[in-house]
Every structure is written in structure tokens, then in C-alpha cells.
Amino acid sequence: MKLDTSGLESVAPFLGVSSELVGGLSGAPYFELPNTANFDRFQKDAIQMVKPAKGTTTLAFIFKEGVMVAADSRASMGGYISSQSVKKIIEINPYMLGTMAGGAADCQFWHRNLGIKCRLHELANKRRISVTGASKLLANILYSYRGMGLSVGTMIAGWDETGPGLYYVDSEGGRLKGNRFSVGSGSPYAYGVLDSGYHYDMSVEEAAELARRAIYHATFRDGASGGVASVYHVGSEGWKKLSGDDVGELYYMYNPITPSTVEQEMTDVAGP
Amino acid sequence: MECVFGLVGNGFAIVVADTSAVHSILVHKSNEDKIMVLDSHKLIAASGEPGDRVHFTEYIQKNVALYQFRNGIPLTTAAAANFTRGELATALRKNPYSVNILMAGYDKEIGPSLYYIDYIATLHKVDKGAFGYGSYFSLSMMDRHFHSGMSLEEAIDLVDKCIIEIRSRLVVAPPNFVIKIVDKDGAREYAWRESIKDAGVVSA
Image (cartoon, rainbow over the protein chains, first blue to last red):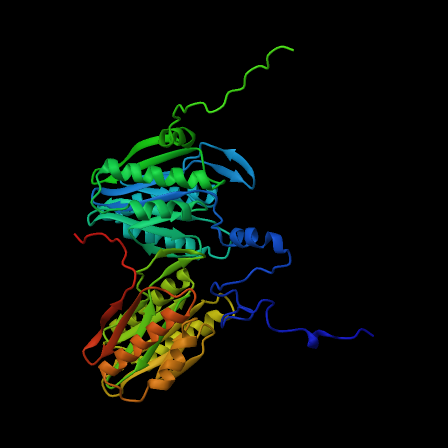
């Protein structure tokens, strides 16, 4: 006869932080502390746990002259870099762009699908779809697939009758309207540079340089981001690609090698 | 974490919600309005998963509007609250919504009312209620200082006390809050309490 000791087991979670949502439902996110079974790895594990999972850096922001959109171009599968030349800025139509973070196939397919729906809207209503409408279409589609494993973290940037528009849409069904977003594993790094350098009244060149710089700094620190920093601008006439710079070369541009005086020199020892 | 709380005063009901849109450790936005105006005299303050929150509250809003179009008169607050609870209950065992709701409304004969609707479709008519980590601080504050028939000044003072308490004691306290009110003149935004201002867009 097997002794049933389940009644002796503690109900409370191990490290005791739980919200009102203890129970069966996979409910709203709550702060879970990592089990410190391995003390030496604790810090690294904690950072890995909170770091955004989508291995990329994308960003977009609204400023006086429109919307600036930038992204890196690295695709990684775990520790393997599978490509350094992925197009992460997707052209939905001539005046709207989408960024890719998460599953590449998911993003490409659903952005293409969104482009189709936008065109159908134009044909049915004889006017272009607004950025608000396009992002809501995508958000509703993603919401209907929630829980089924889609991985999409995208920003829809465009220019419509009301001016520049920027929305963040993700596969959990969230949709946010905002002026500044960054998505991906490199996004915390990019946010720092972006937030401190941002003014609404920037010129197109200044904004492009800010976007490029933010992507560069994120690729410097984040292993899952790298390759080429692409920068696009969406203005009243539509989008235009401004630049695509290899981040390795950007490093030497921002940190030029200066000839320095030699402090010590090795010379041959004189003969015996 | 998300903080939502509300209380009923003398001829009005107030709901307060934080305005942070957070993803793990990243704050995507600190001016996200989580209190939806349901119709002319009703407010829904919702907290929970972002997709569910927007989707479910919009669904309720559209259905409430549909009732008014079909029948020519608006729903009472009690009816809207019970409808909301019914929708949550029906979805609960199939495709649950992770949304907690405080519904505030004003009806001409009844006056102001506040309904507490849980993510597992609990429904209570309350004088004061709260959700989220902030509830640990705001509930006791409200229990201590609330009395029925508070004036607007007293109620806003209590709300500010709660916000200060949340800001000083909660480790991941949201910086900004929005306060909305509903009374005989309708549902409207009352004020924002911001401690971090977004370097925002100059409005066109």
C-alpha cells in the first residue's frame, strides 16, 4: 500500500511571490523569482529570464518629418547565426512599413496578408486604409490565433490622412499606439540610446543618425542582433530607404583608430 | 504591475488606473489609457493581459451600443455589469479572458454604482474595490478613510493618498495614473497624475 503524502506538500510556491492569480488559469503575467538552486548562475539566469526573447533589434519613432524605422539583419537559431542579411523591414505598401521580430515566417506571412487586406480595403472603399485600421486588422488576426504559438512582435509605421502613425502589435494580441517603440532582444539597449537622443524637432538626417546609432549600440551589446543596420523614412510621399550600413564598419566609424605613440618596443637582444 | 481601484461618492463614482504598458522588464508606454468610456454614463476600468483587455472591453462596448440601437434606451449599469459577467462566465471554461474589471456607472433613479468583476466572472456591487498589486495598499487606505457619501474633494484626496502610497511602497510602482469620473453629467476624464512625462509629440 502506498502512503499518500500529498497532503504534507506545501501549497505556497517556493520563493513566495505570487499574485492573486494562483491557480489553474494561464492568466496575466506575474513576477516569478528564479529558484536559486545554482547560486553562481543565479544572476545570469535572472537576466536570461527577463530578456525579450525575440532575437533581433527593431525600432521606430515619430518625429516632425514623419516616421523613422530601423532594424538589424541578423537571424539566429540559438547560438548559430543563420543569416546576416535578413530583411526585417517589410514593405506592406508604398506608404506603410512593418518591422519583423519573432518568427520570420510568421512576420513575413502575416505582413503580406495584411498588405492584401489593405489593398482590398482600398478597392472596396476607394481610399487608402489608415495606419490605425491596418494595425487593428493585424491585431485582430493575431488575437484570433493567440495561444497557438505564433511569435510576432511588429511595428506598423505609416503616413495617412491624419499624419504619421506608429503602432506596436504583438502575437499576444496587444496593440499600442505610441511615438517611440523598440522590439526584440536588443530593444533595452536601443531604448537607452533612443530615449536620450530623441527630440521631436529633428531633421531627417539627425533622426536617421539617431536610429542608426541606436541599432548599432544594440548590436554591439546583444549577441542576437547584428549584420546590417537598415534605416527607412516614412514621409508624406511614402517610405524611402535611407541607408544600410554594416555594423562592423559602423564601429570603426564611431571609434576611429587613432595612431598612438608607442610606449615600449621589443628589440632583439644584442649578441652573446 | 497594473493597479486599478475605484470608489463611490455622493452622486458620483470614480475609477483610477495606472497607465503603463509593460512587457516583462520593458515599459513600452507610460500613457496608455485603460479606462474605457462604455457609453455616456458608464466607465470600464480593466486590467489584465493586453490583448484580452482591449478585445474584451471593446466587445462589451459594442454590445452595449447595439442594445441601445435596438431598443432605443441605454442599459442600466447593473444590466451592463451582469452582461459582462455573463460573457466572462461563458468563456471561462473554453477560452478564458484574463481581465479584471471595475465598472462604474450612473443611473438616474439609482445614482452612482460600482461593480467588481473578477477574471473568473465573480460579480459584486461594491462601494470601493481594487485590482492588482496596488490593491494591497489602496484597499486598506480606502477602508480606513472611506465613508459613504464622500464629496468630490474628499474622494480625490483619498485617491491621491492611495496613489502616493502605491508609488512609495510598491517595488514596481507605475509612474502615471489616470482618474475618470461618472456622475449625472456623464462619464469623463477627470485628471492625470503623472510623475514621468513622455517626450511626446507636439499635437498637430
